[in-house]
Length: 345
Image (cartoon, rainbow, N blue to C red; front, side, top):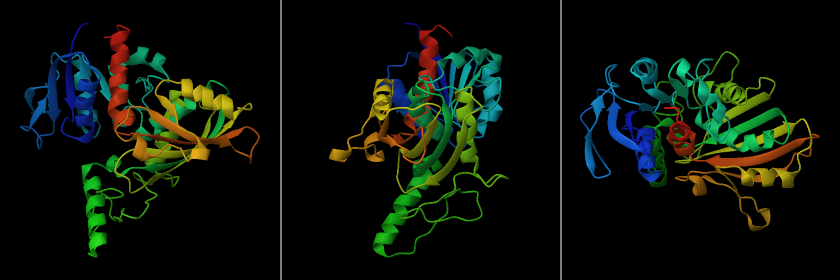
């Protein structure tokens, strides 16, 4: 099997580290590996598969000879993705920069792999938002049974979605609460926001900035990205995204209205047969998906599947998935694997 020269931009962050974990775990065929980050992180040493790598500062000249560029996300994508593509690499980007660009495919390989064929338009493929990925993994097998008319989704998103600092702040707040010390908040809902709120023993119904319609940017990402992934602007979608005091793995409550009736048994059968989805649904034994079960795992779990008795063709379900794995690094790596398998690189 051919091996490829790979660069990881954002190698020192949570998604970058997960890229490395998955490259080893999935036996990804790399020949040379280049680890890139900001000037602040340049010079750090990372041990990977018996070899020590030195993290390099990312520049527009960093991608010569690179065939696959995995971008962990963030503001750097806007500056460096076009440069990497111009150097001949296929860029798989985790940021929101290019997701709604009509010339950039927005891909979940199990859901819409056919979109990958358009990658050469700009040399970039966008990874959807983590919450969108987790939701559409459960929606796709149901969409194939009957057209989806409307989706109402509420998310319960782990603090790791806010970065290492948010995770550390949750841990410190719990310790301070138990010790009876003053609880300080400096990170959530976002470090750059004027106000910060305690996340320990609390929920924060704001992820990202508020837009003119009073939805957050995170909520509208789920709306717009889902329509693009399904190539279906007729789906009506409304979302509420909430940060919860969980370290890792997002959960979502999803209500779906279909054009035709979708039987619960048929829905469970379709979900169980779909790659990357596990049905954990046994109310009699109190078995259902939880972040406790999905953190660090590759699959999305679906449960609490039941008829919505308030409408004619509706189902409710609960879905959990590791947003750093399937919601970010794993999805990007699966795109690269699909391209290798289908000789698109």
